[in-house]
Length: 583
Ligand code: PEP
Ligand code: MG
Image (cartoon, rainbow, N blue to C red; front, top):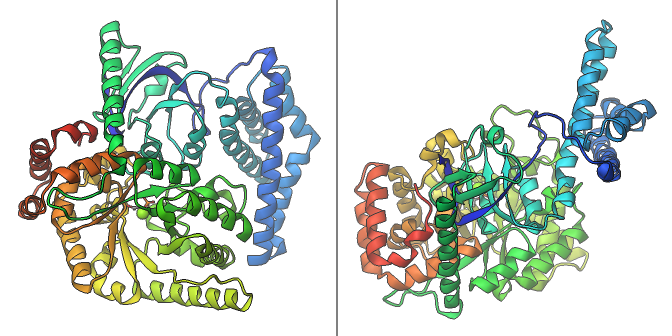
């Protein structure tokens, strides 16, 4: 048995599917004759996509820097039209029978060998272009992987070195029973996606790809972080039973979808959904959510080869709003950077991407797309109740600047006759400790706030949310976090401003008790978790929750808080206790 970081609850038993990614340097994959044409087509599609990707970069560089600097990317485009390069890649597939990613890696290492002997600096520079272009091809192929994968007949447990959010978004259409990764923490975006898809997942199992082979049977428990490779009959039978029990419990809970979200003493709660697109918005209705508390728009951008146009965005926002419960959607502006990278915005090579050019900081420097997004969101008000939420706010200056931009956009839309009637309230994510501490000033500028506890914990604890080595520091049972949250919730209550918590802790049954006790009434989470939090709310009295919160605020260690909340949850609502992940 192996133990990793429990990332997404649930139990699965299924054959492994080892995912080859850009970063893995395994033996080349040899294919059957029948697969040659498929691989040639993948290569061709990847080349076309990279040519297009480079075209966007050329346009941007010409505009921002000048035509001379764009020449590098033009040269890279030419490489993909070079018959000698293309012939080498194609022969690696047709004659040496490599799959497309292996053909690229092998061809690259042959070029590297060849260039080692060249003394001319200019020519040697060409090698970095080849590396860059081949890297882009591999990145594209990790997207197109899904086309092959979608032919998978049986559900599988994916095993990968890591999961990029862009790849994880592609899994929505696949039959994936579970996910295991060598790196990545419980709060990373791929982990969040696994949870929102209801797929059990475990991360931090370094070296598992060395042992696992596609087709091996795997048993996985995402609550405990346990994984068995090639389990014996007994373990297999036990895990199949656990999987059935877990499934039954969830089915039983979802029957509460039409019940009111009220506490045992009648206090109303808003249970909202976090969504990435229209499928999640539909799932939110099925789960009994009362609206969408967080629409992460970046997945639209992550799965798009270039910045989506205003009309394209409007169409997607419209479909999400129309599918959402009560047509209520809080749309968050683009939150790229950190572990969410797209090739066309030119983010690359930062030493600390989570501390750097991320989110609203990146949006400023791309006014062309930021304004386009604001236009599309303001126009989408026509289709339902829309709120606009800005991520990663650290100063009031940022808020003032963003409000000026919204105002300008509104006026422009009005002049064009495109501004629908009705308000669009503005909100700030509270996910940087500076904003939490200066909340009074933030509240002067906005209509509501939403606590992003995933980032708030990572910045409060100086612990990368995606690094399994520090996953224990990112757990929410943290005295410093509860003290900060108490301050935020109290300030919002005093000022009468609505506050939602939309980080992953909103879906953790053990966290519900102190959060409700501190006065939180709006919880936003992946739709899959709404039934269990509703069930728990219906068993909890507010005086009991207040007492829990007071106890927690008096505690000084994570172990103490975790142990206490585990016991309390078992007392108050034992039926939902098995749904929480360990930790
Ligand atoms: C958060 O940080 O808690 C949050 C909800 O935003 P994201 O996870 O998308 O960064
Ligand atoms: Mg965040």
